Structures are given as structure tokens and as C-alpha cells.
Image (tube, rainbow, N blue to C red; front, side, top):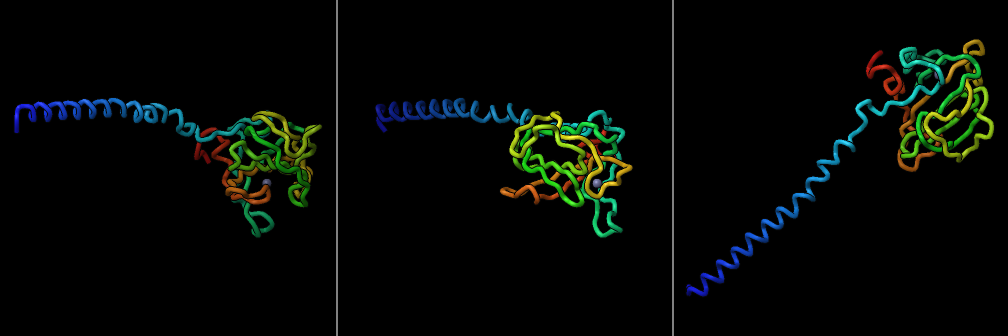
Length: 194
Ligand SMILES: [Zn+2]
């Protein structure tokens, strides 16, 4: 190879090395931000903790009633029952939208609240009264009053309580669908405290 040839080769190698270093320097900021951002994108360490849906009820006063036999064992209880005096305010546990206000034989007066992410529906049953003006489609904020505790439907009139379910929804699934998950770990003082 001629001296000129060596010079050209050297220039090419230098350019190549320079390009590689630019690429590696240039690419590292692209890789770093997701790593730096990742911790804030992690789930809340408290595990998606919900506020207690009945005003004035402490977390450590909750009783895990998930899975208890109902109707003589014909079905199991896919909710938590929260005992409270008739008329106690019931609150939204998440930002979302009132998807359905429904009267059923068993549930009595009910609210189906769809969370903003669309993937969860919170079901409130045995309500005494809706908050005045509450309508289907209405946007509500976490902590906002929805209704009052009662004993409508098949609840014992002498034991008013909120029957509260958390339903994980498949994409496109309507208010009457969903898969119930145990609300207790989402509400109790410590996870798995049962
Ligand atoms: Zn119940």
C-alpha cells in the first residue's frame, strides 16, 4: 500500500472511531432516561391502596368477609361488607365516572363507578340514597360523596352496611361484567393482615 493509501486508511479508521464514539455518546442519553424515569413509573409501594369507601371507618376496623358462604353456601361473598350507621356517607375510592345507577333485588340501590383507567369498576350496594343530583356518566373525584349507607336489597334491615366489590374488567367489558378481586388487602391497615 502506498503512503497515500495508508493515510487514507488512517483517516477512515479515525472517522470510524469518531463516529462510533459519537454514536455511543449519542445513544447513552437515549438509554438512560427510561432507567431514570422507571422508579416513578413503578406501582405505588402501598399497592394501589384505596381509601375506605365509608366515611369515618378506620382501616383497622375492617373485617375480611371475602369468600364467606352466602345463601346457604350456594355462592360465596365476592366483596367486603363494611358496617356503618344508616345514612353514613359513601365515597368514591378513585377518580372516575358513574357508569351505572341500578336497583337490583339483592343489591338494592347500587352504584357502579368506573375508574379513569377503565380497567376497574367499584360496586357499591345496599345504599340508602344517592347523593342529590348524582347521574350516570357523571365524573367524580376520589373522596367525593356518592351515596349513603343503607340496607336496601337483601341486607338485614337491622344491620345497615356497604357491600363493596372491586371488579377487574376485560377490555370493552360492560358494568355488569368483570372479575371480582378481594378488596380487603386494598383497604386494610397492612397487606395480608387477615
Ligand atoms: Zn355483602
